[in-house]
Length: 296
Image (tube, rainbow, N blue to C red; front, side):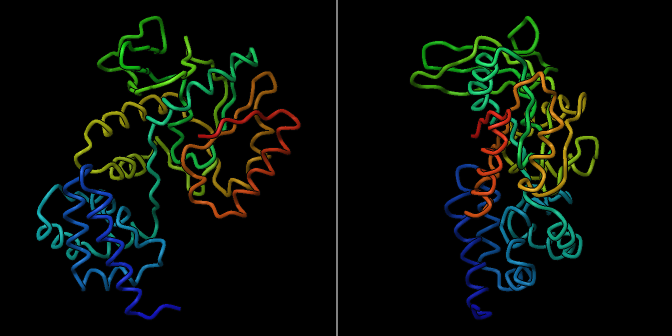
């Protein structure tokens, strides 16, 4: 067991690293706040009272943003934290960093469209680690793939041009022989598994998703809101639980006339080696029956 002093030093280093390596270039606000916390013994002491997995910088910063903290100098942010510490602590202990980035669909789409074309039938999708399920709507978003000389545009409906009040436009730079689709695949069923699924019809869950976006990244906030609007029209089936415990039963609910694709967009990084192996074993067992797989 590390000493109390070592634990405190570790937390301070965590915030210092985030403020000097991760945040600069993406959020000057988060960089300043994290560096401020790293040199603030009182806040480090309070953070160290939380379980280790709740001490990460993004979680406390998102909790403060959820409660209304605006872009401000560190001194003002510190006052906000201290004044509302009990509320912030409650959010940190009850929430998790579940950023749901619809933009990841731009990298998934070529594989999904390729599977649909090869199978000659529509898709049924399961995402493990789904958060609010926004990556389950690749067929409902618009896309622009730029190879440096031309732009390939795809969108639901006959007009590929983005609409001011339409779905998000997911832009992606491509190089090499990327098998870009000529049309969006048809998706007839979509479901997800998450330890704590977020509900796009719940205002608090929607506000939490927005709070997880870094302060200066307005383009991501707009993309999120447009993706949420899409999901709210046809909410996906989301199952709470461990992905390795829920996958086989959920896959059995998929329509038999569709090609079932199980994928993830980020969750594997949060599993240990044994959990990843269990997921691979379940996937292979299902694959002998009917499960293709696209993993990003």
